[in-house]
Image (tube, rainbow over all chains, first blue to last red; front, side, top):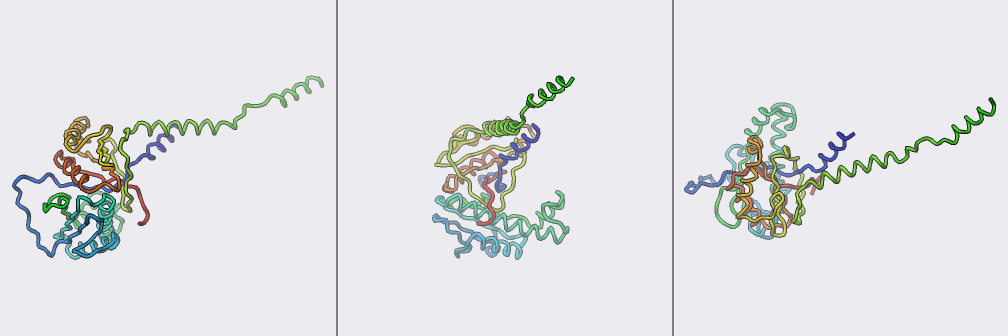
Length: 152
Length: 147
């Protein structure tokens, strides 16, 4: 009975969220890498939480589809560049991250089904790595309201 | 003989058995006690925050290797103590030393930030984390079906 209590109580306070990886801190004299402009999807969040892709306003749902399309078109060389303002709220940023995660998850799920006939969640680790390499996440995040790359 | 039987029968009727009706109440009391005690163990959060909701949130594994950073109303709190941007890398480093080697590698920082926090603060915190090589981060959020 105690065991059941503890199971219940420990599962009550689990933490949920979007797991992301930050790049290592930028070196002092690191030359900025050149990326061809047509490989870049520019996602912008302005001070009024307005989401825009390449200059046109968009909703988070549309953003998901846009990213999915964009990544399929240029699987290994695409770059999603994120630019925020210091006054952007965290909620808007979170929704954007959520849309990005959703887009990649959708593509990886589809590839996992094609390649292994199983959902992404059911794959073993090596298969998952293969899927992850097939659809790598290439995201570059610049410092808010300053022209500097490197943060993801 | 007849007299004895009647006594016996009467005693069996009058003697009430132990009333078990309060048993569920007792069990529930214990249950709630444990639930409350396990929540008390948590950090004393001195920052008011409300995490955003997302559709893609996942459960965070390995709770022992997690450092919580609370952000709200312009204040920053790491695990149990209030701090600021400049002291954050040092605190993370101190916290990492407490962990085992395996856990130090898997160290994850869970950002529990208020919805209305401006990105300037979040970005400063992320830069501080980068400097202390705490690169696995988790944007904490609640689960939502659809926006």
